Length: 386
Image (tube, rainbow, N blue to C red; front, side):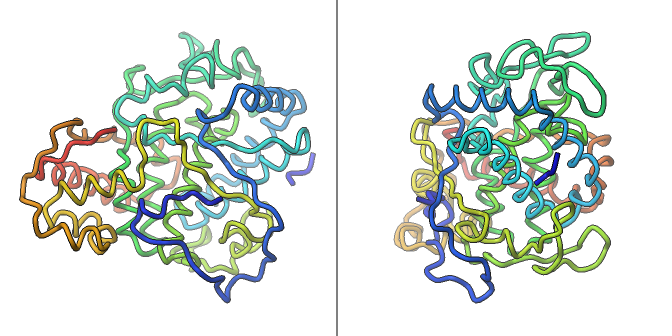
């Protein structure tokens, strides 16, 4: 085998998308755009099509192939700034293989922040969708679309999940905190570890089994998860950082838009802007989920948080006209009447961090920042509706 309308809710970060194409764009504009949807917004017929294609891809060895590629380049695509561009290209490649079976295949994403408070109860992790935890002692998964599968890489084994914390999944990362990082981080050198060692890591670790390993593409949740991370990167990009690519490359040199992505031998610049080159897709929000993460969230933050707290944690929101007009009347400790306080997120395991070549300082920064954020929200009386 050979490995071969953006509804990003600009209100979610208080900015509009770019109005013109950067001079750095050398890829041709796509003649047509398809839309990646949140998994739970798929219709029954769409989900049945996806399941049929995934079964065919498993039959023909594609799960094993993508697991092999991810495992082979593992050290080059984690712990450095290759993380986002490589995985964008990798998920696209998976999607393009799916389209060979049926052009209607479009890779969905899982908006895990919606389920952060009690992820084990997510509808996504139920038999009608991707299934839940494996069964002791071998942790073979017995329900969902991959139930009873035998994976071929790195050896023949039953498809496995082994939920973290002895099956008692703790909280992940709230929509508010992820939104805060999207607003505050101004460099890839900061944004990459902030996401890689928060939402990225906690999902891999807590799903466990195949997802815990370098060959995590054995679990289709991998592609749901990384499509969501790609969506978050895109939200960060349209906040005035479309062509921001800095920080270390896998060989220790300074990465640039001209740096090639492992496996594909293509420059990072070729995947930077959705709607150009091969990246002919966009992301849609899910109207069926509980609440909008765009305007609804921003309004709640503006009307709840004291001026200094809003400016510190949501600087882009604090500069919007709505915030400027209302902020003067927002009292300190303006406790919301509905929702719950944001819990501390589940810490990552030392073993997983070592496997990802994580630098202790970067991890400590993320962990301390997340705790500080929770403390600040509680001190302000903020309760999350999610």
